[in-house]
Figure 1 (tube, rainbow, N blue to C red):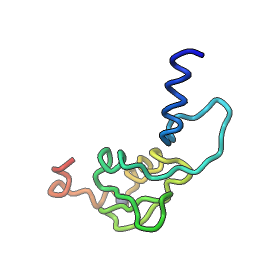
Figure 2 (spheres, rainbow, N blue to C red):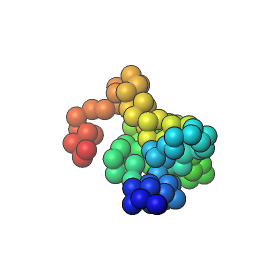
Figure 3 (cartoon, helix red, strand yellow):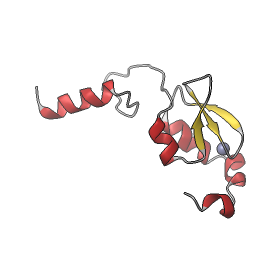
Figure 4 (cartoon, rainbow, N blue to C red):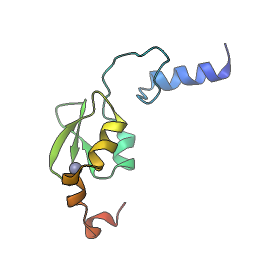
Length: 92
Ligand SMILES: [Zn+2]
């Protein structure tokens, strides 16, 4: 077994939803703590590990199907963009 294979296995076990196997495994993406750093407007929800709170829109969005790409997609929505004011955005 090559090192590359071993490495991707480990990431997979760590719950990295971006590592999508060649065969399309259908699985739910949990909100990851790292996303709170990458997307400071997001936070985990109290009761749903497959969802994220948007602190700007004050709404909950599901990350179950797309994971990080769900957050990226949300960030591009008009509603979200309208909340992004420079005063709030300086801590990004
Ligand atoms: Zn938002």
